[in-house]
Image (cartoon, rainbow, N blue to C red; front, side, top):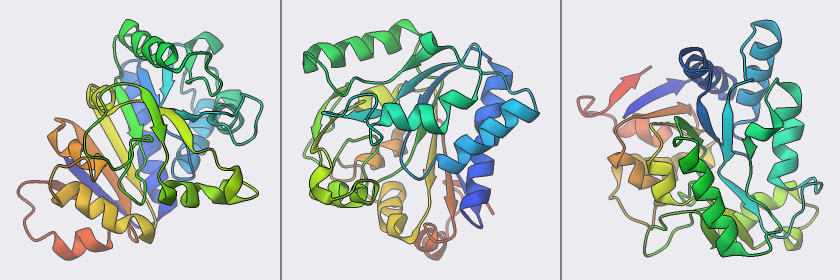
Length: 255
């Protein structure tokens, strides 16, 4: 595991975009696992700039999103389908057929989940999975639990997650309480993982993820077992890490 410390959100996002771009330069037909929310927004903006100004090519890239709210259609401005097209896909040269996002209105939840996992497998698996981290330590919508959910599944969102996401909705009552999410096994099968963390509210969860026990009560802690994880963190989210990073032999650190 490698930790990259950055001074602020913009530097974090720029560094993340360079890693994604490097992946695509080395393997243009890479399979990317994509995240939503406020954390990756500036990274997407930088990738759009690289596409327009530097010729970063997405024509062969295949994408799979981590999750989607249940109950929101594609045209709903709060759906992750809308988020991805509005903030990223509409602005790059990616093929529509290469974009995959779980359905927010599945006819059959179990079939939708199985179909999604099958599509990932048929694509050869995820080369680079981008993750944010929730204030409760969730990745994707894998909430704290007594066990790790393996594959794509339906999740009942925690109250903390609902409250955190309420800023995107008119009222907290409008936030869906269920979602479809890639499972931990699916995420862990990615060849490389890029975890982004910003803001003081993420500091405790990030510290538990990297230095606590590996437990489904902090779902992101499972990343300690992955062979190729890069964590990019800005100053506020890193405050507990910097205080406790006395032994730099077990984790590679970049100032």
